[in-house]
Length: 115
Image 1 (cartoon, rainbow, N blue to C red):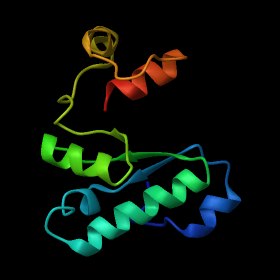
Image 2 (image 1 turned 30 degrees about the vertical axis):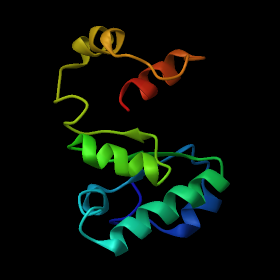
Image 3 (image 1 turned 180 degrees about the vertical axis):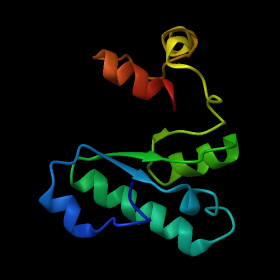
Image 4 (image 1 turned 120 degrees about the horizontal axis):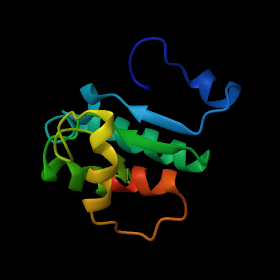
């Protein structure tokens, strides 16, 4: 969970990280704060260079999802995609979501479905 708490750039090189989450505090301000938008963009580019997936937290609107795509972030979570649900409902929900890219694995299918 990059952006708050005890996150540090040293973790990006010192730990076996496959995925990085950008905190909602940055995501929620990408339309109003050039600084937060620049941070999201820079973290996304850095993660891509390190071959790490990026997930943006707190995506609440299509406008925010579109801006994140413009900044290079293709995975997100938030109420724009779905509200909270019990784990038992997830497989049914995922089957009904359109996929932009053909999935290669079940994990990829679930990740892509929350775009």
